[in-house]
Length: 299
Image 1 (cartoon, one colour):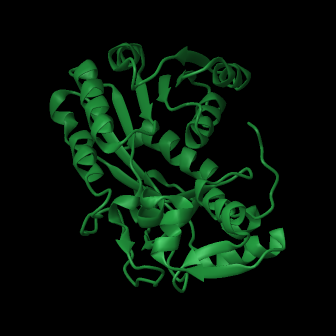
Image 2 (image 1 turned 135 degrees about the vertical axis):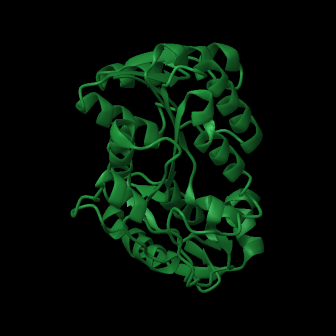
């Protein structure tokens, strides 16, 4: 397959590049600078320089030359929706595959540090997040696009970690830099279910090969509450862990991250990914706490 990856220089995008190159596919990746382009070449992929914000028409046009388009870029909700619609217009009637990256933030619940017993599989009903639930509309556009001759698929990763990297863990480390402690909101019993980045990439590879049009898959393999993560990081860095309220969380992480990430609970399951794709996370990649103190893999 000829595969084009939007967001190929990012944490998830880089893992997608590695997995599809390893699968023997011809891979191109959209990146914004020469350093990221060099990293793609070293990984065995062809870089395509461009920026979805400054040149949306030019970057979207590259999709016409691919069999499978993986969208793993990070944009705000409105430009993301416009980009997906433009991609669909480009691909209409071709029968090509578009896999859109959403996230389990769409079903997260603000709990201010409390645990929620609610856990959601792919086909369960839920109340979309007040803050980011609008992404569900974009998911639905992709899932319904088969009527326009495009095979649309959605993947919702949970909290992603691996190779010494994790946006969530980076947020906890930010609290060390700003306060001298690893901070969590309230009792810290809230959590995002989590998954290793290489296991997420495997779902995309399996989905590209055999997922039905309109499919939605969660990527999740475990869960650990935020206080436990904070205490493990605190021990590793020889600093205290402490509870804070939401207002201090906003000062540390900004309003968006404090509300969407650190004050919410997002628990998910992935029965459809396991049943339809035969996906199983690797048994050596199930515990996010093994990532604490792991060296960063630059690849």
